[in-house]
Length: 166
Image 1 (cartoon, rainbow, N blue to C red):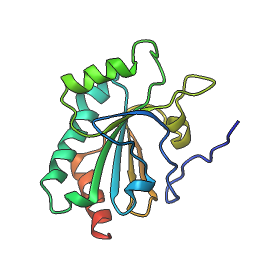
Image 2: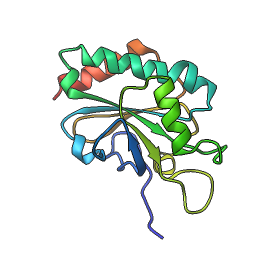
Image 3: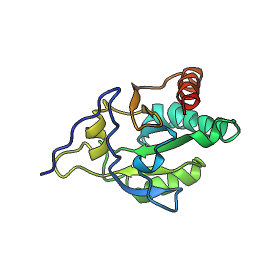
Protein backbone atom coordinates (compact mmCIF):
# COMPACT_ATOMS: atom_id res chain seq x y z
CA UNK A 1 0.00 0.00 0.00
CA UNK A 2 1.34 3.42 -0.99
CA UNK A 3 1.28 6.02 1.77
CA UNK A 4 0.62 9.64 0.85
CA UNK A 5 1.33 12.71 2.95
CA UNK A 6 -1.81 14.81 3.46
CA UNK A 7 -1.85 18.37 2.17
CA UNK A 8 -1.14 21.20 4.55
CA UNK A 9 -1.39 24.91 3.90
CA UNK A 10 1.80 26.54 2.66
CA UNK A 11 3.31 23.24 1.57
CA UNK A 12 3.51 21.59 -1.85
CA UNK A 13 0.06 20.53 -3.01
CA UNK A 14 -0.18 16.78 -3.63
CA UNK A 15 -0.82 15.71 -7.19
CA UNK A 16 -4.47 15.14 -8.05
CA UNK A 17 -5.49 11.47 -8.31
CA UNK A 18 -7.83 11.64 -11.28
CA UNK A 19 -9.47 8.67 -12.95
CA UNK A 20 -10.72 10.62 -15.98
CA UNK A 21 -10.87 14.20 -17.28
CA UNK A 22 -13.80 15.91 -18.97
CA UNK A 23 -13.48 19.11 -21.06
CA UNK A 24 -9.79 18.44 -21.65
CA UNK A 25 -8.09 16.64 -24.50
CA UNK A 26 -5.09 15.75 -22.35
CA UNK A 27 -4.69 14.60 -18.74
CA UNK A 28 -3.99 17.52 -16.42
CA UNK A 29 -1.41 17.50 -13.64
CA UNK A 30 -0.53 20.12 -11.08
CA UNK A 31 3.12 19.70 -12.07
CA UNK A 32 2.14 20.62 -15.63
CA UNK A 33 0.37 23.76 -14.36
CA UNK A 34 3.39 25.14 -12.47
CA UNK A 35 3.80 28.82 -13.19
CA UNK A 36 0.02 29.34 -13.05
CA UNK A 37 -2.43 29.86 -10.21
CA UNK A 38 -4.82 26.90 -9.92
CA UNK A 39 -8.30 27.16 -8.43
CA UNK A 40 -9.95 23.78 -7.79
CA UNK A 41 -13.60 23.44 -6.88
CA UNK A 42 -14.19 19.99 -5.36
CA UNK A 43 -17.85 19.06 -5.70
CA UNK A 44 -20.46 16.34 -6.03
CA UNK A 45 -23.20 16.68 -8.63
CA UNK A 46 -25.89 15.73 -6.05
CA UNK A 47 -24.68 18.24 -3.44
CA UNK A 48 -27.21 21.12 -3.27
CA UNK A 49 -24.60 23.72 -2.23
CA UNK A 50 -22.37 22.59 -5.08
CA UNK A 51 -25.11 22.75 -7.73
CA UNK A 52 -26.67 26.01 -6.55
CA UNK A 53 -23.59 27.95 -5.41
CA UNK A 54 -20.12 26.46 -5.88
CA UNK A 55 -20.28 25.36 -9.51
CA UNK A 56 -21.98 28.56 -10.70
CA UNK A 57 -19.23 30.42 -8.82
CA UNK A 58 -16.54 28.37 -10.55
CA UNK A 59 -18.12 29.20 -13.93
CA UNK A 60 -18.21 32.91 -13.03
CA UNK A 61 -14.54 32.82 -12.02
CA UNK A 62 -13.60 30.92 -15.18
CA UNK A 63 -15.42 33.58 -17.25
CA UNK A 64 -13.84 36.40 -15.25
CA UNK A 65 -10.31 35.13 -15.87
CA UNK A 66 -10.96 34.39 -19.54
CA UNK A 67 -11.63 38.12 -19.93
CA UNK A 68 -8.93 39.32 -17.51
CA UNK A 69 -5.38 40.38 -18.24
CA UNK A 70 -4.37 37.80 -15.60
CA UNK A 71 -6.30 35.10 -17.49
CA UNK A 72 -3.26 33.29 -18.87
CA UNK A 73 -1.92 32.96 -15.34
CA UNK A 74 -5.06 31.35 -13.86
CA UNK A 75 -6.58 27.89 -14.32
CA UNK A 76 -10.00 26.85 -12.99
CA UNK A 77 -10.59 23.13 -12.48
CA UNK A 78 -13.42 21.05 -11.10
CA UNK A 79 -12.88 17.85 -9.12
CA UNK A 80 -15.85 15.50 -8.82
CA UNK A 81 -15.09 13.79 -5.53
CA UNK A 82 -17.76 11.24 -4.69
CA UNK A 83 -17.89 10.10 -1.06
CA UNK A 84 -21.57 9.05 -0.99
CA UNK A 85 -24.21 7.74 -3.42
CA UNK A 86 -21.47 6.00 -5.42
CA UNK A 87 -23.82 3.92 -7.56
CA UNK A 88 -25.60 6.93 -9.07
CA UNK A 89 -22.74 9.43 -9.37
CA UNK A 90 -20.87 7.65 -12.13
CA UNK A 91 -18.61 9.28 -14.72
CA UNK A 92 -21.38 8.76 -17.26
CA UNK A 93 -23.86 10.66 -15.07
CA UNK A 94 -21.24 13.37 -14.52
CA UNK A 95 -20.80 13.76 -18.27
CA UNK A 96 -24.54 14.49 -18.59
CA UNK A 97 -24.41 16.91 -15.63
CA UNK A 98 -21.49 18.83 -17.18
CA UNK A 99 -23.32 19.09 -20.49
CA UNK A 100 -26.68 20.10 -18.99
CA UNK A 101 -25.15 22.73 -16.68
CA UNK A 102 -22.74 23.90 -19.41
CA UNK A 103 -19.61 23.55 -17.30
CA UNK A 104 -16.85 24.87 -19.62
CA UNK A 105 -13.65 24.15 -17.69
CA UNK A 106 -11.83 20.84 -17.14
CA UNK A 107 -13.33 18.52 -14.52
CA UNK A 108 -11.55 15.49 -13.13
CA UNK A 109 -13.12 12.44 -11.55
CA UNK A 110 -11.43 11.71 -8.23
CA UNK A 111 -10.07 8.14 -8.11
CA UNK A 112 -12.11 5.89 -5.81
CA UNK A 113 -10.34 4.57 -2.73
CA UNK A 114 -9.25 0.96 -2.62
CA UNK A 115 -10.85 0.61 0.80
CA UNK A 116 -13.66 2.84 1.98
CA UNK A 117 -15.91 5.53 0.53
CA UNK A 118 -13.51 8.51 0.51
CA UNK A 119 -11.76 9.02 -2.88
CA UNK A 120 -8.01 9.40 -3.07
CA UNK A 121 -7.61 13.13 -3.77
CA UNK A 122 -10.19 13.90 -1.10
CA UNK A 123 -8.09 11.86 1.33
CA UNK A 124 -4.88 13.63 0.29
CA UNK A 125 -6.38 17.06 0.85
CA UNK A 126 -8.32 15.95 3.93
CA UNK A 127 -11.45 17.70 2.72
CA UNK A 128 -14.41 17.63 5.08
CA UNK A 129 -16.96 17.45 2.29
CA UNK A 130 -18.21 19.41 -0.65
CA UNK A 131 -18.01 22.06 -1.82
CA UNK A 132 -14.35 22.67 -1.08
CA UNK A 133 -12.14 25.30 -2.71
CA UNK A 134 -8.41 24.72 -3.11
CA UNK A 135 -6.09 27.49 -4.28
CA UNK A 136 -2.56 26.64 -5.41
CA UNK A 137 0.06 29.24 -6.30
CA UNK A 138 2.42 29.22 -9.28
CA UNK A 139 5.05 27.28 -7.36
CA UNK A 140 2.60 24.49 -6.53
CA UNK A 141 2.06 25.56 -2.92
CA UNK A 142 -1.39 25.09 -1.38
CA UNK A 143 -2.49 28.58 -0.26
CA UNK A 144 -6.20 28.09 0.51
CA UNK A 145 -8.33 25.16 1.65
CA UNK A 146 -11.91 26.28 2.25
CA UNK A 147 -14.92 24.11 3.04
CA UNK A 148 -18.18 25.71 1.88
CA UNK A 149 -18.67 28.56 -0.55
CA UNK A 150 -16.35 31.56 -0.31
CA UNK A 151 -17.28 35.02 -1.56
CA UNK A 152 -16.38 35.72 -5.20
CA UNK A 153 -14.66 38.97 -4.26
CA UNK A 154 -12.45 37.26 -1.69
CA UNK A 155 -11.39 34.56 -4.16
CA UNK A 156 -10.69 37.10 -6.91
CA UNK A 157 -8.57 39.18 -4.53
CA UNK A 158 -6.59 36.11 -3.42
CA UNK A 159 -6.16 34.83 -6.98
CA UNK A 160 -5.11 38.26 -8.26
CA UNK A 161 -2.54 38.57 -5.48
CA UNK A 162 -1.03 35.18 -6.35
CA UNK A 163 -1.14 35.92 -10.11
CA UNK A 164 0.60 39.28 -9.61
CA UNK A 165 3.50 37.46 -7.95
CA UNK A 166 4.16 35.39 -11.09
